[in-house]
Amino acid sequence: MQNQVVQKIQDKISSIMVILVLSKVLGFLKMTLIAQLFGTSRQLDLFWAAFTIPDTIFNVLVAGAVNAAIIPVFSSVFHKDGEEELNLLYGRLNVIFIGAFVFFSALFFVFAPQIGTYLIGSNALQSHLGFSGVVNPDEVVLFTQLMRVMLLSPLLLGVSSLITAYLQVRKQFFVTALSPLFYNIAMIVISLVSVKVFNYGVMGVAWSVVFGSLLHFASQIPSLLYYVKHPQGDGILVRNIKQYLNKEVFQVLKLAFPRMLGLVGEQINVVINTIISFTLSAGSLSAYKFAFSLHLFPVQIFSGAVSQVALSNMSEASAKDNKKEFEEIFNKAIRQTLFFILPVIAILLVLRLPIVRLVYGLESWWGTVTTSWCLALLTLAILAQSVVLITLRAFYALHETKLPLIATGVAIIVNIAASYYLTNFFSHYFDWRPILTQIWTQLSTFNDVGLWDVIKSFGSDVIKWSMSRNNSPAAVGGLALATSLACLTEMIISLFLINKKVKIFTYSKSIKPVLPIIWNTCFMIFGMYFIFKLSDFNLDTSRTVYIIALVIITTFYGLVSFALGCKVFRIGEFDILLGRIKEYAAPFIKKLLG
Image (tube, rainbow, N blue to C red; front, side, top):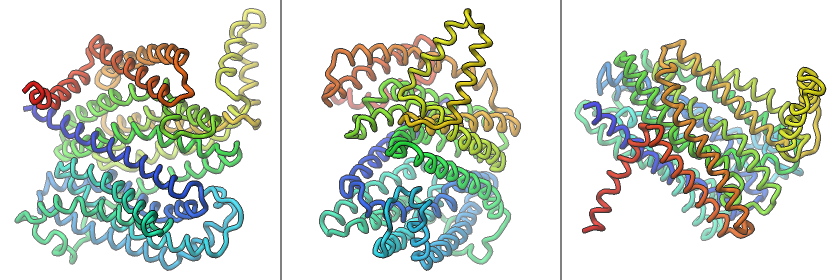
């Protein structure tokens, strides 16, 4: 019976990962299409500036609340009080959140001209949004029109997110994973048609956001109606309007509020990093953003899939007050996440330069090198964010949202301080190797001057470099490393706090099973680096075809090395993965053989 449950969970995770990969690929295609349609034009600048308002409304009001409060409370009500009470709660929350979205959207719609004048007329915010020069009245009008159109998006996405939470409690993960896929497809098609065929310009992209949100919502309606038509679910959307404020609703709002504050804090990090980036070389912010987008890929695909399933299962275990099952699900999710994440980190770390060249095709060699430099420093953030994603879900399943706020608050402080001092530190170098060379030189000569003198000298240099600004473009690496340090801080504090709440993270069950995966990844990195250098010396990497060959050869070696290491270290997750691959491949092999 337990094996059947595990198999079902693996099936869900595998299916969700496939959909998330497709969605992410379409997301990259969407960004590429928009860039090709408008380039780095003022019109596109106005679009992104206008997009920040509806995006902020959605993220603050619902995006954080879904995982932090809505799914855990839905799960608790479903398993304790039954389907009918779940349907009643769902309807009540619809009333509240739709009302909130209509109120804020209407408010911003009315004051859109004033908001536009303030946002794109403010010198500080112009710098933050990447504007230059004076904004004329026509551009304020266009900004207002774009924002008003896209204010329909948070309402549609908000209602759709509530459906997502409802369906995930019902274990309908595949359907909910399809919604972002449809969102990206709609944006690509509508943008292309409206701009190329109807010449709507950037307004066409704004409407593509609305149609993408509509398709995100509509794609989940059939699955929702299946449960609405259930005898006990009749009247789910109407009959509960009279009395929609009860203890469960207040519990959702109580749990959601700290997460909303946490999201505001995360935005502070974004603003601070952006402000600092404008004190660096031109193009530094773009390099950081490109690298940041790449580093999010494995986090969203692998950790996103695992944590999505884990949240529902942990919420169920918490509702049943089954601590042992809760602990098992949590640690299994951590192991599964690291099993997929660590090899990807190895590939990004070793092949960062050719990957950046292939993905973005930047004309500037400086931009390629700087982006790859940031990507290397962000690999630590991939690891930390993946673990934090699982840990946050564990908090949410326990109906605890205040403790994660502590970890987020400390991480904000670390990020602000580290961003300033590390950008100063790296601004003294055009490459990271001189730093290591100087450290090695000082340490290798300590017999003559004394180890303590070397330590004092190096400490003095570090303070001096951190307190002064030079002109090296490598300074932007400080933003990337600060992000990684902030994420690592949040990870450590989150794990400590979850153990204070309920002891589920231990050496024997959490750390020891992961050590073989870590060692295996280290051997993978060393081998890949050797193959990469060997191939780099023998291939003309000025041509795209050879860059592709270099990536394929090195990645293939790395994956084979990791697979063999899994057998040597007896890593159970690999056997499960191999079993799933055999199961999926068996029908195709059978057809081929005939």
